[in-house]
Length: 158
Image 1 (cartoon, rainbow, N blue to C red):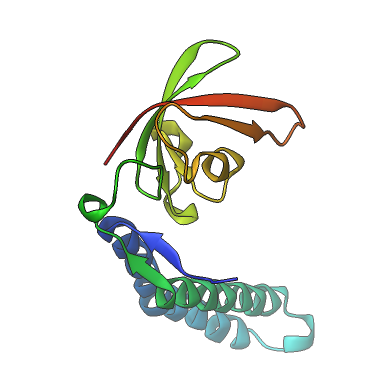
Image 2 (tube, rainbow, N blue to C red):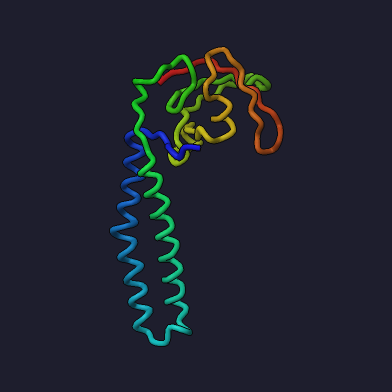
């Protein structure tokens, strides 16, 4: 399975900015916390030192994860994609068959997902169900609760 993730230019830039922030600002802040705690004496009974070292470990794990994401990231120009099928960065209008309501989603990489603005991850149940479908097709999506949701593709845009 490929670890490649597809991003908009803005989405990838946000990842790069966060990675730079962690490496340049947060690393220095935690290093200073460790130094301050070390100056307070006996390390075997120093809770501040232990907490700072734990924070350092978590920070380094987060940096490693972001470095992997950035190195496997590919920028996709939505204007170059075929809009006859649902792909990443598609803007999809769906009709929820059971309730006859309409919703619009934009399929994005997991780190760009924000349901409040209609951006859903391609790895989410709805995203997986919609991928590859054409206008007029119905996707049957199993929700985390175990029920099945039917979504008819009304339109696909970029």
